[in-house]
Structures are given as structure tokens and as C-alpha cells.
View (cartoon, helix red, strand yellow):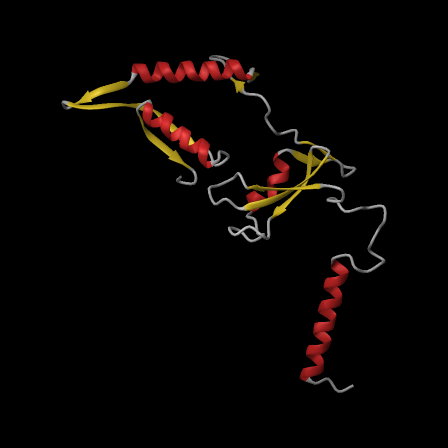
Length: 196
């Protein structure tokens, strides 16, 4: 057989196409009726990635109130279906798969606030109301103890003893409210991981 450049390219193209179709499960030997698609019978919910301020689109597949899959939204103008490594791991924030392939709640996910009391070596769980009360009390005490009203004859009304670090898990409206709280209480040290 005389192999020319043209016949080599045809052969390489046909081989690549066959390998690709086999890899996506279009050959009958690899298709197994006992292993249905993970996203079969799911509801598709379009949302925005919560990791940073870029706002990439994410499609969550939900079955019986459990997220079974996440992937990039190809129709979203920001990421056009691609996701960074953090965005790809969205599913694992809440769930992981057990040895049988069933989704189970992620054992490393914190669902309650923790506190380590002064002198204690272990963390203890708190109820949300108690944690919020402790945080609010400490915030006010620190602000009152370190509040500067005037400096060099100029009214400044600020405190340098507290800093605020924003979270990309919050949406724009929540970040707007946080910024209002920060300025109304006199904080001047604040930052955000996405520089919003």
C-alpha cells in the first residue's frame, strides 16, 4: 500500500474520530444499561459560581433536593461553559460520593458555628443565635474601646482596631450592605478577595 500525505491525513482523521466517538460512549460495547447517566431525571438549575467576583455561570443538576452534578454554563457570557478548578469542585462543597457511587453529605463541611473558649483546647458547637450574639457584642466592645473621634483637631470618627474581609460567597446586594455597615461603624480597614 502506497501511503501518501493525503491518505495519511484521511487515516489519522478517521482514527481520531473513531477514538473520540468510542470515548464518549457511542460504541455499544462500552454502554452499560446498569450505569445510567448521573444527570438522568434531574432538574437543571442555572446559578452563579460563589467562589470569586467574576460571576461565572454554573448549571446544577438536582434530583430529590440533592445536587448530583455541576458544570459550566455554555450559554453564560462570562465563562462560556468553562470553569476554573475551584468552580469545578462546586459539587464537593456539599456532597461527595460513597463507595457505591451514591451522593452523601460531605463530612468535612461545617454546618454549625464553632468556638474555642479561652483556655480550652477543643472546639465546641454553638447555636447560630449565640454565635451572632457573641460576635455582635465583641464587635461593639472593640469599636467602643478603640473609637477615635478627633485626630489633630479633625473629626475622623473611625476605629483602626477592627478589619473586615469580604467574602465572594456573598452576592452584590449583600456586599453592598456590608460596605454600608463598614462605613457606618467607622471601619477603615477593609478588603475583599475579589476587590469589589
